[in-house]
Image 1 (cartoon, helix red, strand yellow):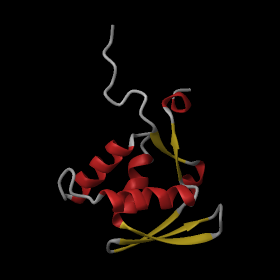
Image 2: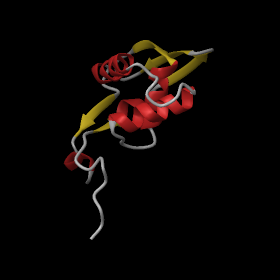
Image 3: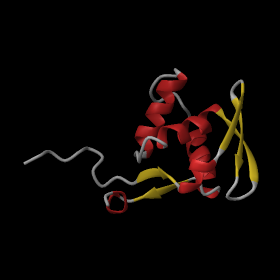
Image 4: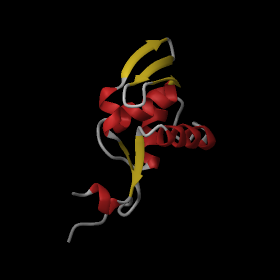
Length: 108
């Protein structure tokens, strides 16, 4: 019998279809992103951009996304402020670019 993943049952973050059409322009560590689905332009910092880039690869738990962003930023695990990460993911959800799904919704 296979062992259950430690994240089994944990909600997963996933990109919405709107992410596929984003138009990106990088300026140092600032990203200007045009979202055709809303006709809005957003300014993302590097952390927010990395969250989206992580999730383009597939659904991940919040913990895994945060760890991957920390690794890419080179700040060390647990060094990205939880409040900053939560603010970025909340904002991406408000913009309709990511959503949080329970495991049953992810497995199709």
